[in-house]
Image 1: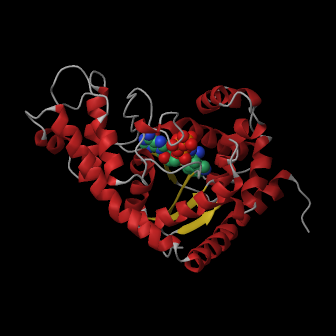
Image 2: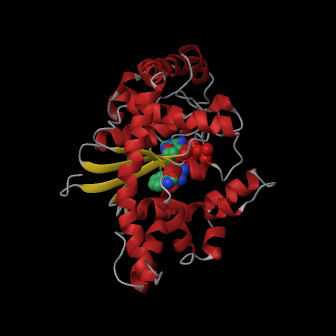
Image 3: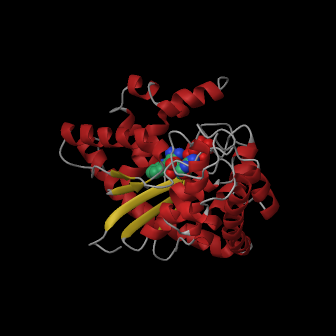
Length: 333
Ligand code: ATP
Ligand code: LTN
């Protein structure tokens, strides 16, 4: 760890295969940031179980996600890459922070309300406590910045509030983290319902493009994407949400600015446009999929990375946890 660098923390839940929304809003951004910060990237499996999971699938998806992080360009030598449940301090700090969090504020969280509606038969305590566990993740590492998609902004605000509340109740203990949001790509939308964010657990898989989709599937999904009335290909999220979403995806995957992206399609029709977006995405996904398969085949390599990641993460996390325990008044041996 380089003392002079700031700390960056982020995570993704192994709830399903990742979508290009997760890639653009999270992982791709991490790759660009990793050399400027001391980075901690985790697989949030404890968050994943707030919605019922099939054990064998959760285990495999966790490993797939570790391999995917590396295949996308996260360097396990430079960053601390680990599985959340491998570091017990997360659950421990979450418990302490629960006593600084009000039931009412958790009930008002947008994601809690959405997920309660979608999983009405299983509104468990974990689902309501999700933001506190996320606050524990972030605060354990004295994090400066948290790059996430816009859907996580409310959770980040709560993490800040909890940190400030604790610091005020005792003495400064936690760094108060800042969210880091992208200008283009912070909210990639569903291809069939551009008013909704693209989600890996959406009901209709045709609106989401998964990083594991093959070329034909990617192109088919883009061909069927909903566009807007009129025929111009312009970035105007208010009036042309479908087209603007496709332009954002194109801009990020081709590495071109939004102006350049719009120029590429001046005078072209929706058919050519959708095909071009599909192709640029499929071209980008292929090498990632190939690298991921290679990495997954070497279980020993993966286990070594995860072991070292969990040890390094535990070391940093336990420093914060013991400060917290001392301040709260827990008797220490
Ligand atoms: P789920 O649908 O299972 O709740 P999700 O697709 O929202 O999952 P998360 O694991 O909750 O994915 O999020 C991982 C990261 O990806 C977060 O930083 C989140 O902000 C980002 N992200 C998720 N969906 C999008 C999206 N459509 N556009 C941009 N970023 C996104
Ligand atoms: N809830 C986050 C995943 C997550 C996370 C974190 C993100 C869990 N812990 C800590 C940033 C920092 C999500 O993206 N759904």
